[in-house]
Image (cartoon, rainbow, N blue to C red; front, side, top):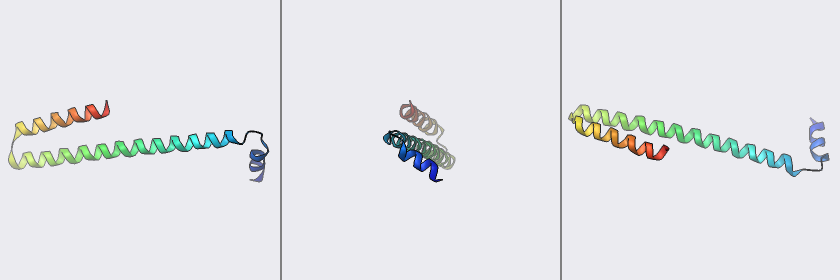
Amino acid sequence: MDSPRDYKFSTNLPQQPALQSSQVVVLAVVIVVVIVVVVVVVVVVVVVVVVVVVVVSSRKQINKYFFIISHSIRIFQTIIF
């Protein structure tokens, strides 16, 4: 394991592998953030749908149910697109 380390220090461009590693780290952080945001959005949508279904089944307000669903779909369309 000493030969790649010696090769890295013996090269004349020490900034190039550092730049590539930082780009890889930034890319990994961006991918993780995107995955976390997608998971949070999906969980929020599921919770909102479950709460709306429970409220509708208890109060039986079908018009309000359709209004809330269409309004939330519009909100998520404006957020995503």
